[in-house]
Each structure stands twice: as structure tokens, then as C-alpha cells.
Image (cartoon, rainbow, N blue to C red; front, side):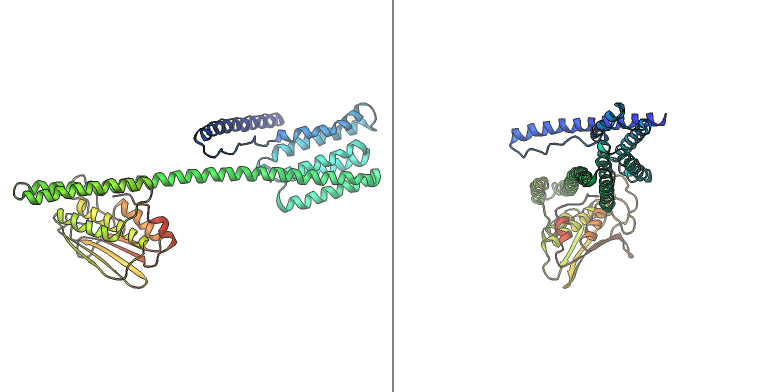
Length: 429
């Protein structure tokens, strides 16, 4: 039967909620034990989630009416029994739907509440006495099933209805029923609303923690990949230069080896900074490195810089553009000349890295295929997003006269977005 399937579904949901709570409690105990061992803050203890079963014990308020019914103190006991069965069925139906947002907002739940109100008025007005206690139960169901503005007006209407029926039946003393109905409505709504807010807050906090972990993992992987990709390219280029120079100019070869040692030490420092999350680039430093790397790779470097001093965050982002672009020139272009220019005015600064090599994949190693217009490598994709977030832009693609050109523009004023963008490096292509 349909109602049996509904009961089984409710029981299954209740068991699932209890299992989730038990799992949360196990995680809490483990976290509490670790916090006490390390002296850290003890985490918040999760409480059991409210379910429809938490509303069912209140049906015991109807025991007085049930007792009167079986002791023969109620006129027309079959009518009273049918009304009691109908009220309990509607109450259980509303309680079962009150903890699922979609079901709670369904029209059928509203219809069930209206039917409960009609049955309660009939039983309370017809029998009085202990039958009037169904009004607080009606208020409890109303507080569980409604939220917001609907709850305010529905709660007031139920309380007024309870007061009117009770006063008509038992006089002014029946106003106590109205007060109890109002209190049961508002307290139930407040407790369940607070419980929902706590659960949503806990879920949001867990989501933020998960996002923070993912963001840190992404930052570290990008930084490490970028550092290793650039550093290894420099070491390979300088090692090849040292090998070529060794037979005819040992002093020059030793100079290249010294540079390799310096690059390695600098890479160790940057890796430590990447781990701690405090690594920042410098445009001047990257321009000096670019000259050295391009010269060692047999590419003629032409570097020019003009304009006013830049904000540290702006320099950091432009430094990453220089590093990424020069790495691509050395690894992929096969160019003999690379020109790097930095110029700006009072509002914006432009960085251009142009080579005269092939605008296709790497000259050696597996082919990467043509570099599409406006994209470049995956590192340039990441930089494009960062510069856009900082109010700038980046374009990379084949130049009309041959070669490949990377152009970056940024505001000279430091933006708030730059502060969050600067420490995080892009993935090297």
C-alpha cells in the first residue's frame, strides 16, 4: 500500500540521518582527541539532526481525549474516534513532510494543515475539555511546516481560532489554550529554524574549508610546476652552453656552471617561499634573469624599460609574464632574437615580449602543435585569467611579420584584486 511505502521511506530516512550523525560524532571524537593532544581549539560537537520522529511524542497530549473516548465520557464515540484518527493521521503526514524543504512547501502540506484546523475546531468545539489540547498540537504542526511571513500570519490565525473556540466552549479560561497554541507555534518554528541555520552554517563552513584546501593545493601545484619548469629549462640551456664552451673556453664554461649553481640555489629559495605561500616576483629581477637565460640559449636579448615605478603587485604579475614568455621562447620558438619592452603612462603599463622564431610548437622534443591565436601555453592561459581579474589583459599569438608576441597590460595603480593574485603563480606551459 502507498502509505506503507511512505512509512518505510520515513524510517529509511531516519536511519540514514542517524548514521550520518553517528559518523559525525566519530569524526568529532577523533578531532577532539587530536585537539586535546595538540592544545588546539576543541571543535564544535554536532547534535543529532531533527526528524519527524522528534514531533511524534507530542501526540501524547491527546491521551486525555483518548481516555475519555474509551471510558464512554464522550458523546458519539464513533465520531470522536474517527476525528481522533483523522487528526493523528494528518499530524503525522505534516510532521513527515516538515523536514524536507520541497515537501514542506508543497500545496498538499498546506491542504493538510487546513484540514487539521477544521478537524481541531470540530473536535474542540464539539467536546471541549481535553479535546482543546489539539490546538497546541495544531500550532506545533504549523510551526514545523511554515516559514517566514506565512508562519507569522498562520500562527496568529491558529491562535485566534483556538482562543475563539475555547472561549466559546469554556469561557475566558479558554484563552490559555490560545496562549499555549501561539507559544507552541513560535517555539517550534524558532527551534527548527535555528537548527536549519546551524546546519546550513556548518555546511557552508565545511565548503569554505574544502575550497581553501583546494585553493592552497592549486596554488602550490602551480607554483611548484612553474618553478621547476622554468628552472629546469634554464639549467638545461646553461648546461648545454657549458658543454659547448668547455673544449675552447674553460673560463666561460665555468661561468656557466657558476650560473647553474646560482639558479639552483635561487630555485631552492623560491620553492621554500612557495611552500610557505609568501613568494612574490619582481619585474626587475625577472628582466635580469631573462637577459642571462636568453644569452645562454644563443638568443639575442633586447630589453628596454621606461615609465614611472610600479606597484609591487603590478611588478609581480608582469614578472610572471616575463618568466613565462621567456621560458616559451627558449623551449619552443627557435628564435635568434627576443625583444622585451616595458613602457607605461600615468594610468596603464604595457609589457611586450616578441621573438623572431617560429610561431608553432617546440623546435626540439615532441611537437606541441601550433600555438593558437590569443592563447599561448597553459601558463599564459592562467596569466590571462589573473591579469583580467586585476583589471588588465594579456594577448599572445603569431606576429604579422613572423615570430610570436606576448602583450600584457595592467593598471599602474595597485588594485585589491592584485593582492590576492600576485602570490599565486600560473602553471608553466
